[in-house]
Image 1: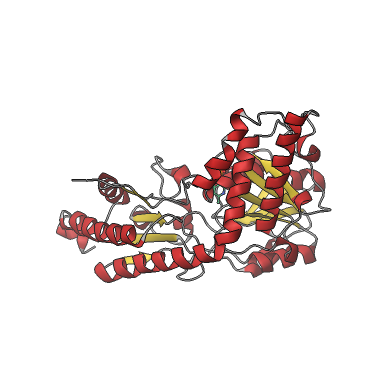
Image 2: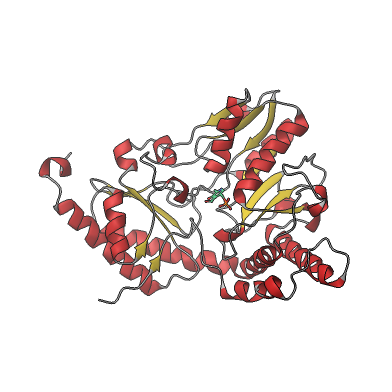
Length: 388
Ligand code: PLP
């Protein structure tokens, strides 16, 4: 039996686009200069970094000076929160209960050091009420941090409204846009966002590189200290090849974003429609429409996601239970439990996240495989469990 790979875990990471690889390659061995060196080889690297900065700024609707290259989404998240606490001298953060570990775990560490963190709940559809943010802000609040799109469910948060609330209350606002970038239009010049985190490997760029957007005029203190790279905002020799790759991926995303949303959204909707029609006791985790277009988190009652994922993997279909970062842990998804799912329902849930490269044929094939696998797993269950 021929076995083809159908990759449906694009929220974990994406394949590096061929155009991106092509543009990166010369920066490993031809233009290998240090971007801080004064001679021409260094200048080539410096100019390449600047060009990437322009491309990322365009994708985000920001200006070049506001773009700081980092090692990825995690560093950008940690840096933004730390900077807000450091520059404000305040000791409290407001965030949500469903943030990625890059914010959630960092906040837990802050709490161990005596900082206070208010975590706002989400509804059963995974959404946040902006009025809760307004109520949670106190005079001691240094910053609000709310993700733009959830990595497990794809549910969108009201970033524009929250930004306006924070601006009116004089509180810094950070958003983790790792799962939103390139999936929806972002126009930072028109929004009240002070910090925004981006990761290159979620939209066809290489891993280990990202961006922290820092709004012009916002007080900032670096997280990493050393050389004066990134205008003193992030020390360390630039990873030029990776930055070039991220720049090219950002440029392609700027050109293709609306086409992506349309094409991938239609495939995702067809995938869900077919599965919901083909099986009983399946439901979508998260708001049906207020989601990024590529993500489908489904709860299959009376099915253990581990068994389903194993069965799908055997057929070359790659998806995940919860986020990649929590795979391997025996805990249910914190995000789904916060949305009110029982532990059992959380363990019965699978995230499928589509990408630019998925074809309709792949999605049809995956849909049929999911329906058949769920039926098979349910048939093997004792009757008492099925009717529970
Ligand atoms: N934030 C969100 C919402 C994510 O989905 C991820 C990655 O899964 C990160 C942050 C971390 O990004 P990186 O892998 O670039 O450190």
